[in-house]
Length: 161
Figure 1 (tube, helix red, strand yellow):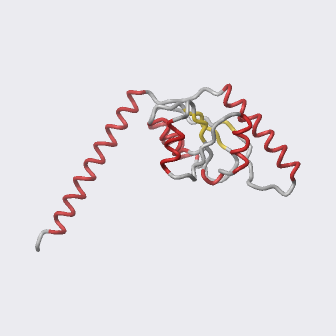
Figure 2 (cartoon, rainbow, N blue to C red; figure 1 turned 90 degrees about the horizontal axis):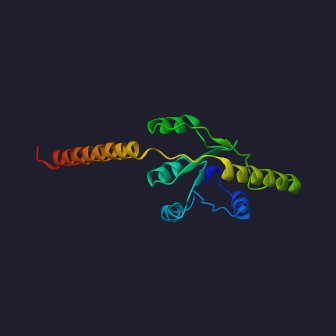
Figure 3 (cartoon, one colour; figure 1 turned 180 degrees about the horizontal axis):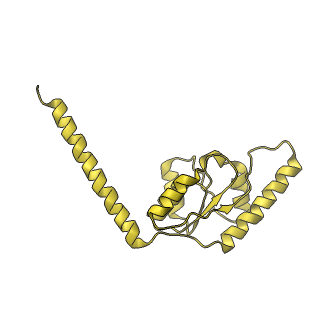
């Protein structure tokens, strides 16, 4: 699952040739969730894909390209909140089009070889079940407080002065 800015048909083709599923983060939410539910291990450049995978208990492997969009400090912050380490595996960027067809084919072949290597040798990550449960509890508590505060504010706005 690439970052949405790096998603393109070339990556989809590389994954198809390797026999890997490809989740396009630009798809609608229901399609992305359906694809994630069928995933055994997610190779993710998209941080939100890794977050959802982890929340669903799906192991994930972080990757990055030299492409646009990946903000390392956000990854590190999220990973640290789950006692995980952000150590992404490097992939070459694949651009949607290339003026030089041969160079594009070589770049795709290099990307495929690297992605294959990562898929076979990289250790997937998954947050500890207890930590994940604590984070869910924190989320539910904060959502409940937000709902309560919004309802109080709404009530105050409707009361006559």
